[in-house]
Image (tube, rainbow, N blue to C red; front, side):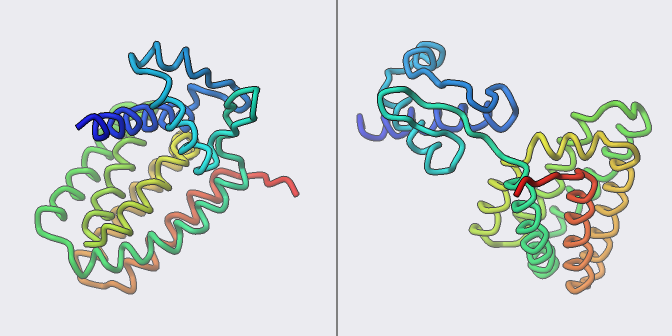
Length: 218
């Protein structure tokens, strides 16, 4: 029981720290102090230390012996690479979703599209709501793929580029185009056209990446 609680605490600390890093609460080069984090989260230093090691394995933290743990975050190249990989995986995901999607999941996607259009017409500055709905649309597709591995992998990628996605959705006219692309993907899935769903999903992610104008240093 004690070992399970330790793993649970470590997981809670890890998820919170990762979310704070990816959402920009912690900036690049910020130091993550075990004592401070432990006090803030009401845990001992052990689960914090283990969570930091796990974050280092993901490349989000750099632990320097005898100095401390520092945020490394997601670089522009990381964002570019993630979108390139996502473009291929999201296409495959849409293909599998076409083959396995349920009527309930189709209803969810239709509702998300309608809500996205509603929020956009009501207030074009509601970037957070539209970005959240964008994320929900993709997560329903991940679930509909009927693959735990696909769902887990793409969900993690989605978290890694959270800030980039908000910047993209907030860019001029991009939110409208993104919703139209979602509608087209959904229509292809409803028609059972796996080839078209895959093509459109791949293109959708490439459009998002192009809209970010990512500059990669050599």
